[in-house]
Length: 258
Ligand SMILES: Cc1cc2nc3c(=O)[nH]c(=O)nc-3n(C[C@H](O)[C@H](O)[C@H](O)COP(=O)(O)OP(=O)(O)OC[C@H]3O[C@@H](n4cnc5c(N)ncnc54)[C@H](O)[C@@H]3O)c2cc1C
Ligand code: FES
Image 1: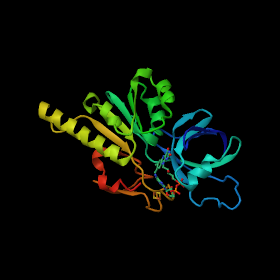
Image 2: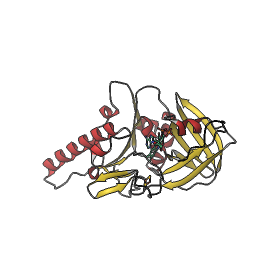
Image 3: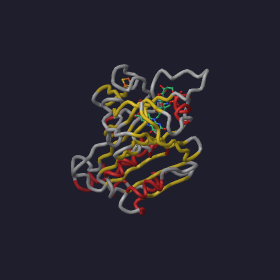
Image 4: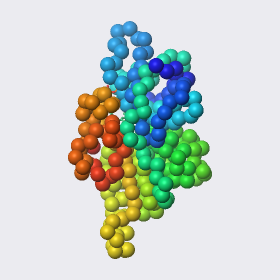
């Protein structure tokens, strides 16, 4: 168990929980969290909930989360000074590439959660954030990268954040968000790679796209197979071999379940 420093509401149903202590974990990895709000008549949830590492410092770790169902609702009711059960870090996380070239980070809605810590590693990256209502976390991104101008935001119910992005300007793209957004990003990245191959006569395009995926999870440690996703290399457990995959590896029809 670890003590909660703060659990601040930053938008409707969206919270940032900061938890005290020295916690390990890299960009794109996640923890399993479980809270007990002490409300009699509500039972302590049996299973912990996966939340990505949003931010991390020497003496704290932070999670950005939306209240979705019962587990996250209980987390949202916890206050500073109360405790939360925290297990992790789990998963592979985003790659730390030495030769990454120009990098773009693309987050759709709650998909921006794992990208703040990622932005702290790739401080020269351009950041694209998409919302379809209230925005959150944008200032934290502006402060994390070298220049606030690197952060571009689309807040619209009609337009996608992808309308701001030209994949051909980048060598590496790291993304997290709704499955539909990730699939559209994979298609336009593949099209840009095909175009580059036609121009250069090469055998493959140069833009690398890594996506963080979501599947329902139960154990979080690779034992139950609830989170299995189909890939070119066979079935993979999202909690161990994922949640980050190279875009060309995944079977998109298998990613639309959450
Ligand atoms: C690797 C990973 C990282 C995640 N990071 C974040 C994050 O940083 N912020 C955030 O807001 N959400 C994140 N999610 C989604 C979050 O885990 C779910 O919203 C949450 O588990 C819902 O639990 P609940 O009890 O509130 O809802 P319920 O619907 O009551 O949950 C019931 C069960 O379904 C599972 N479940 C429900 N929705 C999801 C979902 N979208 N993904 C996976 N399992 C789900 C729960 O774990 C639980 O076992 C992440 C999911 C995964 C897989
Ligand atoms: S959640 Fe149990 S194997 Fe991944």
